[in-house]
Image (cartoon, rainbow, N blue to C red):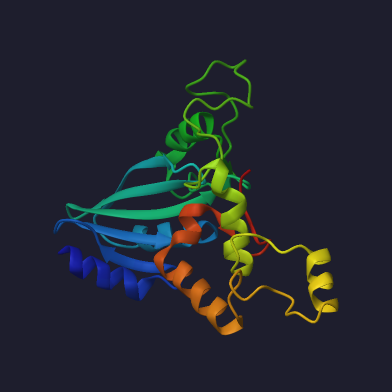
Length: 221
């Protein structure tokens, strides 16, 4: 099968995830899935004839750890990519359905601090048995692309459309003085703010900066 045929096959098989884009070159297929869907996605690849598990590669971006599950399928490299947030640091083990993944998962766990839920091996594989669990040799500190001096401004800008936050007491004082609550040059109106946030999401800046929309703050200090 060609890479495009494999992409179409997996697209029909997978029920979740951003399915199968062809990677660089004619012999690679890349599948992006959410971490909670990793088992289902791997099972979809295993249903294909001629598939063979190769390895798992971990890449620490500072904010998240990307896990690349690599398979060979008729000479085509099929990669299932899942991103694990460092704050949680967990993902289901696939060792019970792919026995060859047992040692690789354990190696990634020891070096990057990822917990593979359901993994049965307890003894260390790479590090000494007395190695402290708080120290992971390949794990970077939790940090994004925003340098420290700009982090507060970025938080204020993404959460409220203003690079300088207008505090609650200032809002009350402005209202009593007969002024608008928020200075017009410091913040966008609701429609402009929505347009601005949509642009931030489309360009992926929020992910690179490590901004969490749920709490309105960066994921790191």
